[in-house]
Length: 348
Image (cartoon, rainbow, N blue to C red; front, side, top):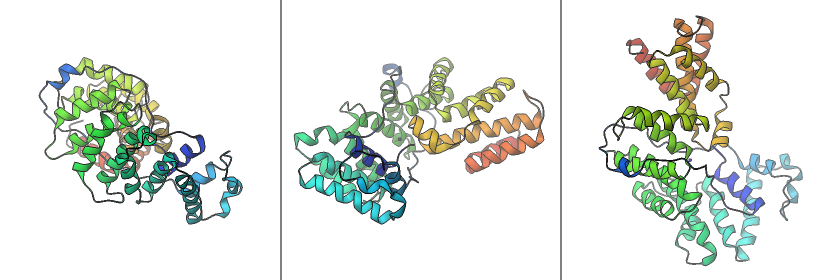
């Protein structure tokens, strides 16, 4: 599900003249047999997305746009956040008054980050206008997020599920893939969990190119989460996801090599993984959630530190070990604490 903020995406779409939501390349999934298997264990929760980029930052990056009416961007540093937001809103309002359905959709995206956009997305989802048809599924995906996160509306998991179904089942090459992954995460986060449905939707998303779902499928195979454990299928899926840049998967592969005492490979793979720990940059490049990227980096950092501390697969280096333990704590304090407790109990 980073990644540009919703405001970034809306303004970029405004400048370039097309809609939103990224799409990956095709990757295979063994689907029919998967759907019939027993579901067993738990998987990761669905985190809420929080964006750090500001309206000011977005407008600054768009200062060279050729869109008519944005000439005031030549010196963006003189404007306040409120001024820039009002300017973008004014431009979109003009397009809405001229009957531009896309502008209404973009205004909804603009307000999404500001916790106001649900009613605009609702208009697109319920619209019968042929002009709005190609926007309906992206709007349904985003409105589902609004209900799941409580952005401008009450939190409603049921309504989020309904809207993601709308987006997921209609073959939109962008919104549908994201909705399928969101549904997979939703079903694995519920209490009680429904991992059979989670596996089904991650399989659908993986088959349509979702890097995030491909990684989750590999982990479900690896640990027997909701599907019979299958090491061959797991490693095939995980290695493909890793090659495509899934950092969360990379962290789990480091753990896999370490636990099987393939220490030199664990060290080598961990070092490559933690070379770049810019979570936001990786999120934008891979379209994966920052939450999972940080967790994967923290896992790789911790196991690298453990190898350096104990001299496993590499020369012992206490100073370097402390550095990577600190990095793991900075990236994801919770996972670092869990791994430390596991180590203290002698389980790794």
